[in-house]
Each structure stands twice: as structure tokens, then as C-alpha cells.
Length: 420
Image 1 (tube, one colour):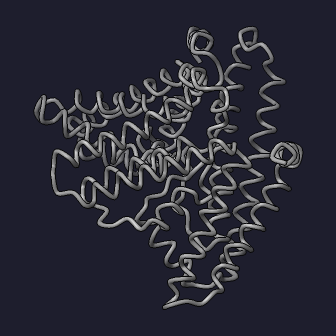
Image 2 (image 1 turned 135 degrees about the vertical axis):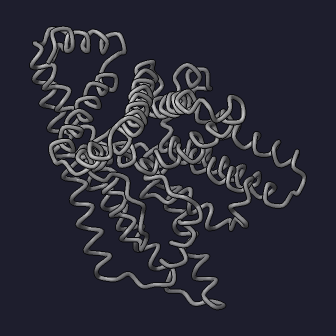
């Protein structure tokens, strides 16, 4: 039965997800119609419907074994987070936090990285749908429970937060507090016409981005350079610029679909992209590219690491602290995207770029006159020159997304050896 369903999904991907979504909407809104003690039974039924449909989504579009494993993992993290909220013992709290992080990151490593995954029993070597995304949700809840930012953890809200199927496989990465508030609002408010219109429009936009722009651009890249190392320099530049277009419309297309689906369920899923290629520097680019991921990493990795280093080396070395934090954070972004050396190098490349920009920005503020700084902040030419340089830097970096790291290095050497 499962194999028959998977065969249908393989050949009718859009049709199957439309049918799946429609059925999920009927189940969800049907469960909201019941009446109970001050609506509590209705809330429970609707939350359970979201959990059930998310579990089925993980089983059908991923694998039943992994869906069960995700459920078991969610139960374990909920239990650990619950103990974090209850205990007052600082040593026990720290131990529980480390245990939760180990379980979360250990499972991510086992199922995401081939070196470890290949060692698993054959029945567990399955598609780990959404693991990169819900692992970050687990870590967020554990860390915020330890910090005291989360005061209570409702089981139905937490499980719905993890299994909410519009964002389960490809984000955006939500936060528990926001989701719980959104859930309460969605369950207490009937779906408005504007939600339906906005949701369907966003889904259509996302489908157009993904299947028309991104996929067709990918086909064009393959046709232009079937053997990239034999391509001419102009073709190499064109391929990287086209890939910049492809990766943006691919990622943002998935986000649009998730946001649109969430709107049909009455949820306002956080935005993930805000015209990143039109930003005049690398910092602003990353503040507007995959925003839920970069804001998560800034809060849970960059800032804690910076605070730790500040205590170790003192405040007199801001560039050193910033450089280390940027390199570690962006290396984590690279490893999060993929398990090969290419992704790690891509992350370090981005971290180095951010570090250099910080030094340039600080030097400009220190030695530049007020007149110069004022002119630069108001000049359209400076703005668009910065946007062009940022796009160029990002486009060169995408080489590590497409090819092996050694091939990417050869491509970049060929691109830059004789200038632009």
C-alpha cells in the first residue's frame, strides 16, 4: 500500500500534495467544529489533527520508519524539556540540556551524513525528511527552557509545532512561543476570505518560482555546461549567475508554498526571504536570506560564542572575536546544508567575507569623514555598486553548492586568473 502511494506521489507530485493538503484541511477544520468545555475539546481535537496529519506526511513523503523515529524523538525531547522546566538544580539542568543537545545533534548526524548513515541497519537507512529543520526546533526549545524563556510546554502545542506539515520538510524555522500563540489565534478565529486568497496566491507564486523559474534555469545550466571544466570563461560566469537565480527561486519558492499552506490553516508562518540580492552588503544579504535560519544561528550560536570569547580574550579584540564567530557560524550553515567538504568550504568562504566586511565597515567609520559617510549612505551609485559586488561575491560562492570542492576551486581560479 505504501509503495503504491509513493509511486503515485513520484509521478503526480503536485496533484498528490494538493489532494493531501485538501484532505488535511477538511480534517483540521472538521475537528474545530466540535464543542467542549470552553472550547478545550475543540482545541485538543484540532491540535491532534495537525499532529496526525504531520505524522502521515512524514510517513508518506518520507518513510514510515523515520516518521516513527521522529515521533519517538519528539517524545524524548519533550520529556527532557519538561524536566528542564521543573528542576531547580543547576547542575542537573545543565546535564539535561547537554543530553537533549546530544540526542538532537546525534540523530541529525546519524541520518544526514552518509559516513554515519551507512553504518545504520538497513531498515533505518531511509529518507530523513525535514530532520535539519525540526532538529533546530528541538534545540531552540531545549535552550530556551534552560534559559527560562519558555515557562511551560503544552504537549499538544509542542507536538503540533514539530509536526506542522507545511513547514515540516523545508521550513521556515518557527519558534515555539510564536507558534503556540498563532495556534491559539488560529483555533479561536474562523478562516477569513483574505487568508484563503493570500494563501492560494502565495502557493501559486511559490510553485511558479520552483517549477518554472528554478527548474527551467537548472535545465539551462545543464545545457550550457554539460562539462563545466571545458566551458569558456564567459559561460562559467553565466552558469554561476544563473545558479544564483536558480537557488534563490528554489529556496524562496519552497518558503512561499509553506507560507501559503500555513495561511490556509490560519497560521502566519514567518517570512524567509526579503529581496536579498538587492542588498548593498554581505551583512544585509544574510539578514534577508533564509532569515529564520540566520536569526536562529545568530541567537543560539553566534551571540553565545561571542559572549564566551569576550570572557576569554577580553573586549580589546573585536575583530578577532567577530572573525572566529563568523567563521564558526557560517561553517555551521554550510554543514547544515550538506555533508560534503564543498559545503564546509562554502560556509568558511561566507564567514571570511562577513569578517572582511566588518573590518572594512569599522575602518570606514573610524577614518571616514562625516561628509564622506553621509554621501555614501545617500548615494544611489554607492548602493547599487555595493549590491553588484555582493551579488558577485555570492555568485562565486555558489560554485561550492554545485560542484565538488576541487572542481569549484579550479572554476574560481579560471574565473579570476585573467580578471573579469
